[in-house]
Length: 142
Image (tube, rainbow, N blue to C red; front, side):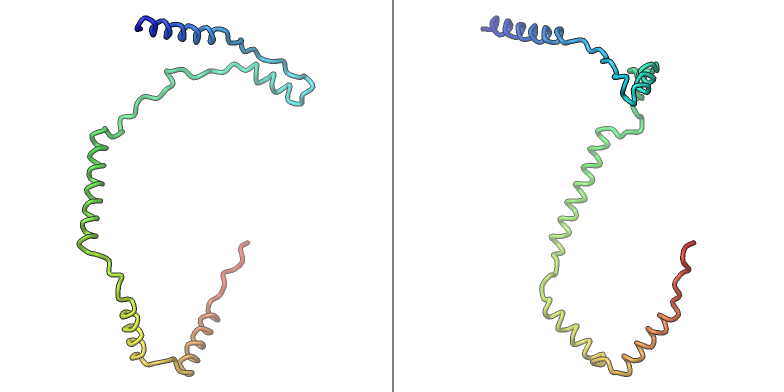
């Protein structure tokens, strides 16, 4: 059984290699000389360029954290998350009693003097008009 598996694997590898060996060679095609960019294509094709090599790969940076440092940071962040969850459990949100809060706020406003009188409204409007008059728009951009 094992011999059969090895033979099948060798046959598959040979087939794959034979398929790669039979690829057509890539050759440049002719440029249609009537094309408006034919001259530029020929000029670009004639330029000798330097292609990158493995020597062009930059060296490994030295200022990257180690795996242990990343682990330490992850542990610290998880610890902060646990501390926050513990604090939230110990200090639940007080999102109840909104009607009582609103009633107390209304009572406080009512004690402050009631509705605005016509004289107070006139003073406020006069103040706003004076501020609008004093507010000069900036000059237009040149």
